[in-house]
Image (tube, rainbow, N blue to C red):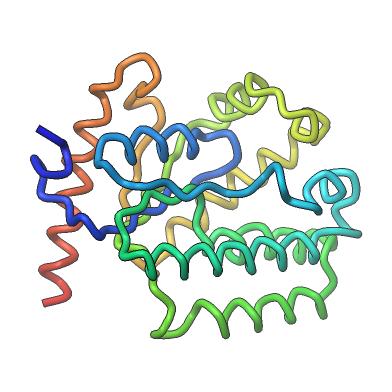
Length: 222
């Protein structure tokens, strides 16, 4: 029996996977979509015209990168809901403002004017009753050492050249961010609690937890 049917997951649900770089969002997105019979929505890294420039010069390109991500994620979120749901999404639109833009502003690699412009645009686009929020955000978390190991193992050149201190600060900021996030229901999963690459069946307990939270959120809405 398909897990979506077994656990009564709505066929039009939209689930977003969040977490710091290297935590395994793409792997979880693929595994969960396969288990539920959902479509996937991935972050467009390879076609991003600013990413390599950004890693070479944070201060010069942080604003450009954040505006690009905001526009692309907004368009993708709109597309998902126009399609009728049934998606698992790799990374949320909320992380851009709650973590990345804020971090660059506070560290001085984004000017106050640029940050305020970005925040104003984000709030006008996303923080309104008209924006279609996901039904559930799955937050993948783990120790900093485990996540750093994963970053090294996947070997993206632009990430290998980035100082370890950057990844450590991002890890801490993610933990602070998720503790106050309330735009939609949240399911927190530690990456040490499953291994969907070696054991595909480890996805089922996660689907069961998703079902429970979605049912609880429906009760609250009523």
